Image (cartoon, rainbow, N blue to C red; front, side):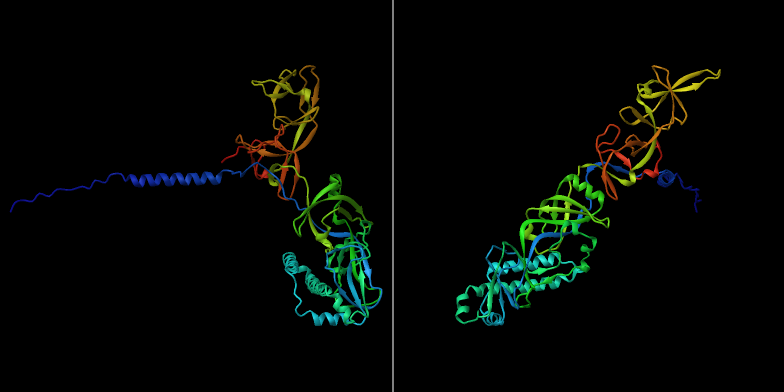
Length: 461
């Protein structure tokens, strides 16, 4: 048997490049994560043009020229004019039946009486309007609406039967019935609430408390006594809404003289003339007077409105970005040019080793100016530094300081204070004047939280 040769086969164990690459990537990720959490990260905000929606919604009390018409005798009242209908002098509004025969006649003759398409359309509009405006906190308005619909249906039915008035006369149904006509022109309202004679000088805070408000709905076919109210007339297109507000808002509105008002009930708008009254309790009331739109609200005492005030657009910034910072204030003639550039700065007095004095140029940034003075940062200057005027050699000891409102601009990679002029603000944002000399421009980036940075601090992405 031939000898067998046995060879020692060694495995080639070369470097595993896949494992090396994985370890390198893992190391890189670990270093990146450590660096990320070890660095201070500042959240930025891009400045854009915008405006604010301020809360200018108020509940107002409507004041009108209202004439309450009272019954001159006892009897059952039946209405023929629709609520909110305008009547002229001498137009029929209601009848008064001492025997209640007319009510019986109406009850026996309403069969076959139908409402016209126009009548049904008006009822449908009233129902939809109530559904859209219903506030569960004012549940009593459900009963007012119920009485209003019942009264409207009766009035429409009565009006249809009245067209056959000659037939009613021939049956002797009118022996104890008197027909009553409008004493003046106006809009018919079938309710009273005790607010009819109010003027601006009578306003108090209690009048706005809906819990204390009571509305007396006047219903057709009800028995009334002598002197009882049977309806009222709103006799003028001139009317007003009075809102309760603070003195600052009142002053703002007075300056406007006329204010655009949106009625939340139907989203219509109108211009109201402004008047102000402060009562003995220190409450401030603003009356907005109108010469139109009264018909839409002649049955409403409380009306929700929004004041549409003219507000300029500007740069919109979060209030969290706004900071108040102190600066040195110096006369303008102490600013000079020098150093290795054409940048602005001041000459500061220094003492040499031999005790003599000299000056050094200190570059500084100007953050705002008035007619005679500049606002300079306090990073390179100190309280008590002596500044030298270039031309005359006069000196000034730094002591005067003032504060500016601003934000930190980070366009250059560090926190650079920029002064701002706030036009108006709410709880979250402020609108500032755009394109000022030392301020911001559209699309600038600022620090979202001003308390998270210091002046000239580097900002990392």
